[in-house]
Each structure stands twice: as structure tokens, then as C-alpha cells.
Image (cartoon, rainbow, N blue to C red; front, side, top):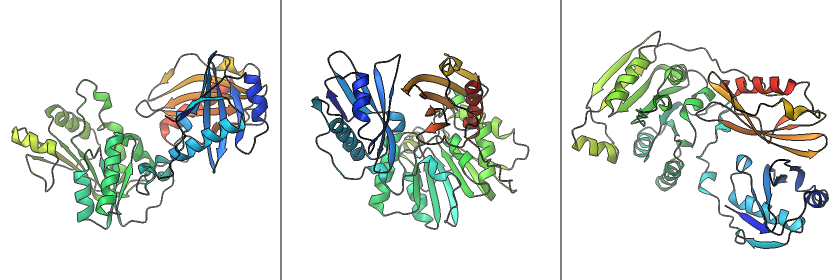
Length: 392
């Protein structure tokens, strides 16, 4: 983690020095409850926060993880420049070697969830693989179907990185990698856009079934994004998951389904090869889409109307997490930039993939910093609740 350790200075002195460098420092926000200060940065067209944490004999300047930009080299440069313009007495640093090599996740084949907001695909066909693991299956499919764009969804970051390497090594151009939760990703897609959704050997989560990717909401969203004759294909070695999936799929108001048992695929993972040697049963459950769906993607408004700072606004936030149905809201910490501005750190939305944002409140307006939340239904429900708390 890039950081610089410095001799501590007072909050007042930090604010005073920062005022002279608006070209890189937009604001300074101090906490009344924690020994830390947030520094709002605008550097090379990126807005993010640095954290200044202090103790009696030593302070540290580092990045704030919620707002972290993708490029590590940019972060290192910004930390170094801020330490310089604020005239810190540097005790130690681990950012002396700033390398400008693009990180793996800066690959054009790596897509952030924000890239799918109101997306219009240029590819003839779209397919999705949920939890691609080693990537063998999605790489094989991409080679066999060059006209199809394959979107690989994987929450395990090292697996996402390995697939990106293989995309470059094998010279493929029809795979996108998304490091996100598939249950929320489908919400971002237009209806009737996809020809196949693969869910091969998902984690069984026998002790925590609520964490399974297959569920009522995921299944409904999958059938919405599938085009006519599109398929949702589950492949599992778990008897419990197979039986569970049949129960979930059977809840659909209209159902066309095929079940196979112990049929081999052209390409298998090393784990599946091991299970075959152990004579484990492998189930394939395929759902077919045979009708068009309405495009139900809603336009969510994440603005705050008629809201502004008042001296008692901190008292309006509940201290404990507020859980309502399929979403929650948790106000974590507050910071003051001056007597008229408040920065509130907040977590909210879906439990599987919570959103983390700052809310900036001043006399003139109220907004999320540095960007709006992902436009999902759970985030919007949480936003409505946040507005109620802000209104008191």
C-alpha cells in the first residue's frame, strides 16, 4: 500500500497549507471522533481522497480505498505531490519508485460495472459465464465463437487477473472480464440481449444458501436478459445444489427445462476431471427462454433535492445499521470541511455487494462523492431511505 510517514502537524496548520494549493487539493475534511483527515484530490482528471492519519509522534498519508483510482502510479504520484506541497517533514516512504507500467486491470478487456450503465453492445451475440474460475471454459468458447462477446463475471480477483493475462497471451478480442457480483450485474443489462448464461460449478454454500448465485432474483433477471431460444445452463457436482436449483427454477411462471446427467463437455476444468475420476455425478440443468421480456431497466434518480447543511444534521443519522428487506443503510463516519460543509461516509444497498460512498452536504447542495452509486434497485431503495434521514 503506497504511503508516506511524516512528522504530524495540527489540523489547523494542515488546512491552512492546503488552501494555497487548489490546483491539486479541492478540500480538507477533519473528523471530530477519529484522529484522521480526508484530503480531496483532483489530479490528472481523477477525483479521489487521501487519508492523513495522525498520532503524537508520527502521521501517515495514504490513499482512501473507497475512492481509489485504478492506476497505482497515479496514486503514488499524487501522494508524493501532496506531501511536497504541504511541506511535510517526511520520516519514511515506500513510493520512491513510481512505475508507469499499466496495471493488468487497466486492460481494455477489464470492464467496471459503471461501463454497463446504458450500454449499447456492438457485438452480434452476447454470452455470459458466471464464476469462470481458471477460465478454461470461457477461453474455449471464445475461440470457437469469435462472433460472440463473452462476458466473464468473477468475484475472485486473482482469477480475473489470470484470465486477463490469458486473453493477452492468446490474442483474443471477444472476452470482457468483470470483477463483480453476478446477481447485481444482470440488473445492468438490457432485456433480450444474451444468448447463453453459463453457471458452471458454483460454490455450493451448503451452510449459507443465501450466498448461492442461483436464486429467485438471479433466475428472473437471467430469463429477462436472455433472448428467444437463449439458455441458462447450470452445471454442478453437488446433489444439494442440483435439488435446490430445481426448486428455484420450478417457481418460474413458465418453464422449459432439460436435465442431463454425467454428459462430458468438450473442455473441462482440472477439478471436474478429478470428480470424474472419483465417479462423482455431474448434473446439467438447462433453462430455455421462449418469449421476449419487457425492458424493465429503470431510470434511477440519485439526486438530493432541497437538502442542505444544518448544525444538527449529524444528530439525524442513526448510529446502528438500518436493515429493510433486501437493502440496508449504515452511516459510518462524518467529517467537516468547514462550518458549512459535511462529508458523511456511508455503506448501503445490497448485502452481497454493498455500495460505499461519501455524501457531501453544504449550504447549496447535497451530492455523492466522487461519483453516483451504481443504478441498482437496492441502491435506489437505500438512497430513498438516506434522503428521509437527511430530511429528519
